[in-house]
Length: 551
Image 1 (tube, rainbow, N blue to C red):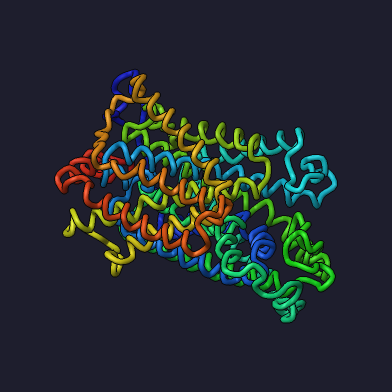
Image 2 (cartoon, rainbow, N blue to C red):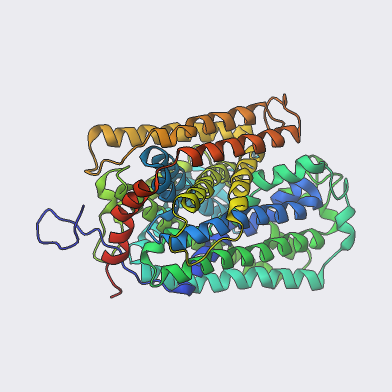
């Protein structure tokens, strides 16, 4: 294992620093949740489901809360850097661990470009930015100048991360106070100055598309994407001063704050719309002015003559996405650090600079983010893909926790999830529902991204780019290919963007039954208790005891 002593010229530091307190962790998760989602989510959800989008936000929030509770127990048990990428590794060995690790990195590395695209989109308010986005298409795309601006913004986010985790946490904490205050101010001002209860039954009604529209909106309109970010406390666990106490509080607290803000924002957005901005239907075919907003809340404020609020919102359109992109860039480098520690990707991803920053991972995240601007040039087109990647990442957590409850019943658990025997399979089912609702159009693209990840992981092993040889444990991962192919097939045959051979509700019944079968199969073939403890001791103990102390 790499050393931090520095006695040999070829030796490089691989130490992180435990410098983040409870507020830093809480604001890392909360600041990641309140990003570009609040700027666009209410508009996109209203287009997708009409006023019933309020129900979609509740469903999405409850679904993510269940997943967050699972992560709260895991993060308290094993506070290691890049935790979401590593829990399945301990439960199922290298074959499954490498797969979920890739899902985790894919999600973390591609959120920052989404936030950059949000900044570019809102900047259309200013005349100097009009050439950055081509809005002649149904979905706006970056122009050449817009692409260059996006790359510069990605570079700035990456550069700030080189300053060290303490400065980053302090910067993010200050930004998060602002990021929470502005949505709350917006909710309050719109509610007391321009709220129309009649909007809830305007156009083609409260629930124009029925249950299908409500459920599809959860994944496709940015609702789940907006709630993402609670796992950042897990990703930074290796740099927490008191991880066993602080991580569960940060994870659960961030989701509670996020749910309140997002549900209230949807109600405020809907109620504040002038009648002139609502068409015959809630979707784009109804010719409603609001569907063409490039800066939804700011444009409403302008329409109803609250100019000072619009000014604040246009400023926040830079600060909120920038803060979220900043912390996700941090998280992606910690995930790649964890993947390297487990032997999945090249050893240089563990190298840290004199501030304890895994800098190779930062560069990799920057490059991946810039590549995302090419095939996915708009905010909305990236959201569906990242939502599915995120949920695949989250799906590994209830499986891992189910294994740990069975195999390690007496392990130290600073936070113990109530009724875990029920909530773990429920969380796994919920994860797969969200994948189904993301539609086949998104799922097949995710499949290609998964294959690319396997090529990278196999290449690392074949070329010997990491001295650690992970224990693959093929039998313990025997359920994984069946799970991935099965979910892809159900999506293809479903009513959610697929052929429609399996009708609404029956496709969800099938997903629930399939999920339970995979869940209990995975638990049956998981590693034995002594194998799990050996794998944990290889990584968790050294990282808990051997990391650099705060400067």
